[in-house]
Each structure stands twice: as structure tokens, then as C-alpha cells.
Image (cartoon, rainbow over all chains, first blue to last red):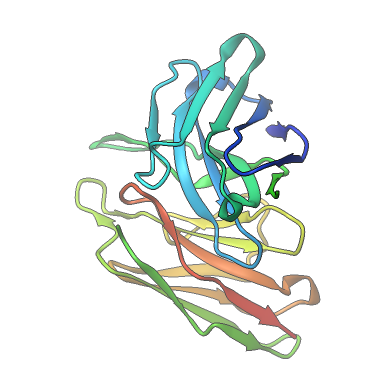
Length: 128
Length: 112
């Protein structure tokens, strides 16, 4: 079965960086996108961007474009999210999530960027 | 960015009764080429990640009970729980994946 297992909770001071990992199993890693979504306490989820397993192609939300970087290690079926210049308001649970199956019909195949499988989440706390 | 809104903010429903959650997007989520609405619904319980319920606006995810259904097109969508069970107490979010940056609604809290 599909599993996404994330690294453990992190605590950082303002201005520091953090790197969170997401190890995938149970499917062909290179065929799907992995998205990163964060959720501050009591808030709606917030999409940060995606990275394609294998190719490393990525797309970032403009809000996170400057401070966030995704990377992938195909040999380990693992993707990484690194955020720099952390602020108090970056305190949140960070999730990786796998995209759905592409939708195909007579007109072609289309990517399906809903989030079919989720990691357990990684709490990143920013505190002085 | 596409703005997603939901109504109501919260609702209390008796066991076995119907719960209806509405979601509206600031622009159409209907893609002309494949006639699909790029809208999904998630259920989130405390301390857990969101769980996919519905995608393409009306396709139920495998393993999701058939009391959950999604409908709507364009800018107006609905999630219906036909007969509320105790385990359905959660926050429900709609989400658009029509255009980047993908966005979520503010959530609807469902209680008994």
C-alpha cells in the first residue's frame, strides 16, 4: 500500500533553516508528484508546491518561492523540503502528499493534483 | 489566486440526519478540454492529516462510505453526508487544483 513517512518534529530559532524528509513506498516513485502542504494551528491547509518524483521538476507557490526548496533522492524514494529564514509564523505542521492518478479520456491525459495519500505530518516549531 | 469559500462555518446534525456543506470558488473550476471540475473534498480529524473523500467534484475515493457524495460544477459545489455517523465528526475542506497556487476553503466543522 502507498505510504509516505516523514521525518520527526523540529524546533528552530528565527532566521534558521529546516529540512524535512518524506520517504515514499508502495508505488512507482517516478510516476507521481509529491506536494508539500502546511497547516498552522486552527488554520486551513496551505499549498506550498510540488516536485516530480525522479525528474526533480518543481513548481512553487509564489508565497514560498524565495524561501523554500524541494529536492529528491530517487535512489531512496525520498523527497525533501527545505525552508530558510524561518519566522515565528512558519510554526505549523508540514505534510507531504502524493498526487492522484492522471485523468485520461479520448482527449488526452491530464495530471490530477488532488492529494490522494498523505504523510503523517512534521511539526516545525519556530521559537526564540 | 482562486479564492475558495465555504458555508456554513460549522453545523450540528443529529445522528442519521443529512449534512450539507457548500463550497464556492472565485472562478470556474471546469476545464474545457476534459469537462472535469478540478475540485476535491477532504475530511480532517484532530491530530490527523486530511483524508481525501471526493475528487473531480463527484468521484468518491476508494474505501470512502457511500453516504459521502459530491456534486456541483463551475463555481458552486456541495458535499453531502446523507446519514451522519458519529465518526463523521470532523472539519471538511474543499480544495481547487485547477490552477496554481492550489487553494483550500476555510473549512466547515461538523458536530453531532
